[in-house]
Length: 342
Image (tube, rainbow, N blue to C red; front, top):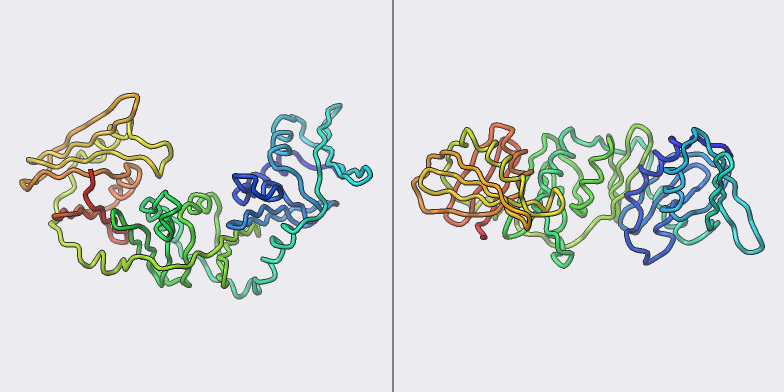
């Protein structure tokens, strides 16, 4: 069949979040073509993207992506050929051809397609609250990065509240509308941001999100106990201080040399003492720092915080509350509680 190269490439890129990063089960690194959809499935995430083909089977994701990226023609031909016991996908562009192993049937198909059977009518889906994605994004900065941290690596939706974090840092975002309760890995939030999901549907094991183009992302629900966040935030006592006028600029400068490889891992040091707030970023290539005036005459305080999160919070009418053992950064909907740890 002849296909538009850019359209197929765009579809495959949309489906990539469901691919396994490690080849524990080979087919979990494959794109699955069902005839009506392209699917990726890794037991934690499954993505369905409508795309009609005249064949059914799967192909190694890295090979078809590399081929489509290197071809430059508008259209390409994809043909499935069978030789004795083996099948192959042949991708042709002009006089060029790439031949990839093609698997026509395996258990991953059953697992991925079974997700659609547990979803009710679209009339049963619920609207995603307007600020859910943004609230989940802000809250996800508090998630633990170590897989052994269990539910501390998750975001929890409970009524109109989004919770995330552990004893060192925790976040709470208040939505205007209530949602069905669920808990998913916080690392998925970055993926969800790349879509414009408008509806969601919660089942016993999965949370499904769908957009206006009928692209569905299914995230496996996580079970287990989490911190009593309401008590954690309720116990905090602090003194509100005015946000320094130059704080945003200081954070910008400090973030130049902030440590951490990814956006969520970045960290800068904040020191408050004698009416001066100092922001400093430091990594193995150098450091950057900036100061601004602040009304503070208490004991010296030092802590680390993600500069991306802090800048995001500071863009709104935000406040800083300084306590004996922790500080809280907050605006009308969002609270971020940070225990001091240098």
